[in-house]
Image 1 (spheres, rainbow, N blue to C red):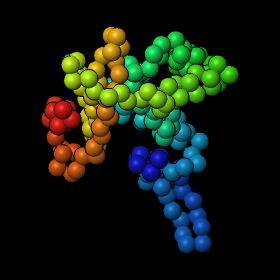
Image 2: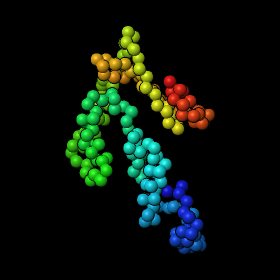
Image 3: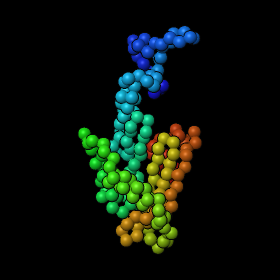
Image 4: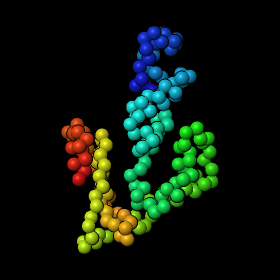
Length: 174
């Protein structure tokens, strides 16, 4: 909230008095009636190219998704109750089916067999991803035409690497 500037003509509307004097906010504080909606609009604007593709934004909560779905068998069918909540004008009703789908996806992503030993006679696949602050990769193979994970890797970027272009970050991940 305190990152969003209040226009000069509206700052007087935030004036308050206390024993130490009279003060006016220059940045948007918590507690203003329209602050949550303004903050939500800013977050959606900032992440507009990623919203609904890779992440969802609700106030200061950012949910990133979409990278590991290929490692969960029947992901689309299992996640259907959760995806229904994301439809336009859908009423948000976190029901038993949503909770069950959520728990099943977590269990499938975190339980064995999460990683498999490599088979040197089969081709390897590497899937890389880069963000402003980190890079990640998954080394895998296909067994019976299904992807299996051999190894996960993640690295936080140092200050020099953070200024790399997106292409350079992706290459660094490789």
